[in-house]
Length: 200
Image (cartoon, rainbow, N blue to C red; front, side, top):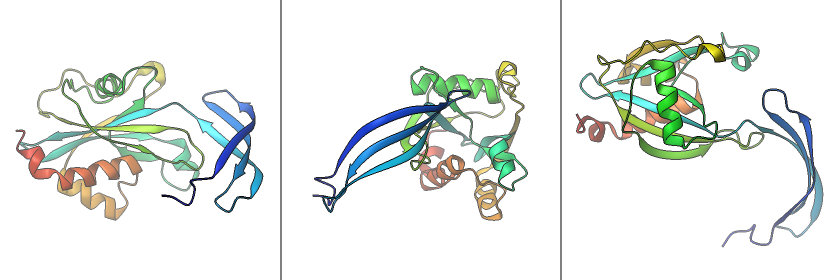
């Protein structure tokens, strides 16, 4: 039982404001709330497609592989713009597991075949439609198929780093790691550390 059992939503108008890189929409809808009152509301919604991200963990070295790249939205919000993150990317029509394998190779140069689904999450549901599929994979950091560094045709400029898991966790508290998906996967890794090590 929920207080929203009788709530209703009726879309009245769905207008495209911009379809340059992704799709920005202005949605007008009737919302009948838990109190039974109906109001007409407007919200801007950003649709960039769904994505995937992955924790790359080496149990022998108890370390993770992260990538550093420039993010203009973070820069515009007072950050240097260079964020440490778990590898990630949009699905682009692929199955999430296949999409993240592709992204891992492009960004880090590691070939992963066995990816474990961890959970899914909306990252900014107040304005963005995107849901992100979270994965984990065991790697040997000494075995790399390619250099990585990102896809040139996407203007990616990526640094690949191996960081001890304990150090990565400490970097959350110092603010050196401040990307949401990365924090979520690192905390998941700490909760599942012994299980991950046993896969070695």
